[in-house]
Length: 391
Image (cartoon, rainbow, N blue to C red):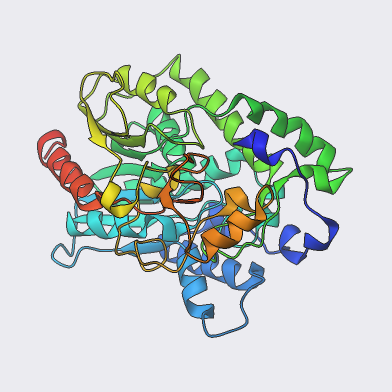
């Protein structure tokens, strides 16, 4: 994927205020005295830093990009809490469907906002993986003060962060991981030197610059953000050599994932020693470790030929990313094939799936943004909670 985007650089006219860091104070990420204070500070940060607040959708944009709490209706004093963490360039909106499920399971749910996210892409120019760790640790500590059982879950970079914390914090009782970033394209190693060059020549500091039409996810991506994810993966690898969690682990991943190395996820899962379960969405019959359930990812009637990295954690009913959602993800065509980009954005795609997974019969593919088997996945998680989590 990275090789495709390295062929072109953003044109000068594409630069705007959103590609510069905002000047807002970020101390609340680490110094808030309570979760309520953290939520207020993050919301103010979104209101100050966003560059697209100028119309009737302002409220939904602020709410979707801000962290939130879900409290179970039938458990005024829940014993379990979970912190859910979104992925790179995403916002707390990304985990909203999962949050609703854990709320129904009786969990107090905190969906956090990683520093540099939910505001403007330029904020990722000045944010590092240790900022994400520090913020995550701060909120985990708040939950550990209030709840008997604390769990961590996340998507992509957020899942990797959850594993890292489980190696450090013995209070974490289990992990729920969706497409954890445990291995990336080897070309990602170019991101760090390009990010350094970007300090002198700003255009080199961006992996890609796009319209950022998705109000809940950055489409523009700085090289530094990629470099920080690779650094976090290296740090996790080093930490894993001296520590290993034995907590229950649930994982979901896609074989056709174009963003991450799905084989690395299988290898990591095979090394786990505690109670475990994994769903592996595949269009073939790959060899998988024990406790991994292969799930078909091709549905001809729905024109779905594979599960994308972006598809796992959204319900088909999601109003933004679902089967009839307003957002069509076509970024893989933006620079290389503008005509396909226009067709895809207009809803004229031949099929849905992972980007660059075209065939003769599927020459324009829209990246799948929802999980057609979302309810089935939730049932698997529910059974895992019942059978593998201690009372």
